[in-house]
Image (tube, rainbow, N blue to C red; front, side, top):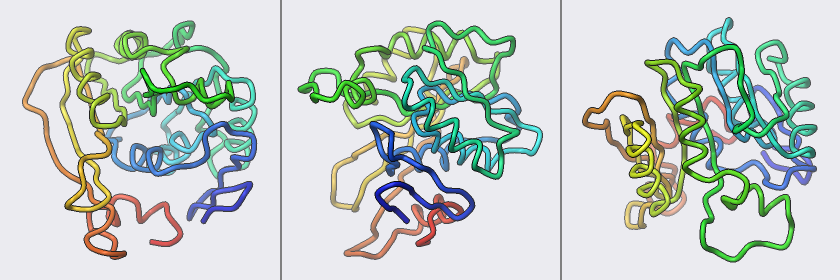
Length: 237
């Protein structure tokens, strides 16, 4: 449930009053979709207001540790407050840093990112929103290289991107020796074009597991694939 200042989930709330980007479907989809099995060390790159990190905190083992990296000052303050007020302040640690400058003492079993994706579109006037939505401070190559540097040998790297940008990202990742192992499409309705790719990468090359998530089956009836994925989080499901 969304208000002007908060988004309320079943087990936690996210204050997004000071965030350039509000809580949206992309963050929930990615946080709910990633394979979190046996992931102890988890990294969220560009955590924003912390939604994905909080979803992963809810889903992960009680001994898991989540590092949430954010470069923006305002977003870092907002995320830190959201983590503190959640049921899992002991599991999530905010790192105020650019990922290019982040060199932790551990490697990660799972890395997630809802990355900037507007490469060639007009830049909005607000600098915070510009940084959040455009590849100005973090290019795809920098993101992929950082993820590869920080992954364990069997670790998984997950992103959500629009259709064209997702295909570009897969090609760029292959050049950096990270290969797509899961590739799910997301559409609002069966007759619509693909709006997002949910993508998982690893160091070994194989035929990716594929699938589809639909928001609506018809009219205003939720599709089972979307309900099953997000029912532990959204109040309305």
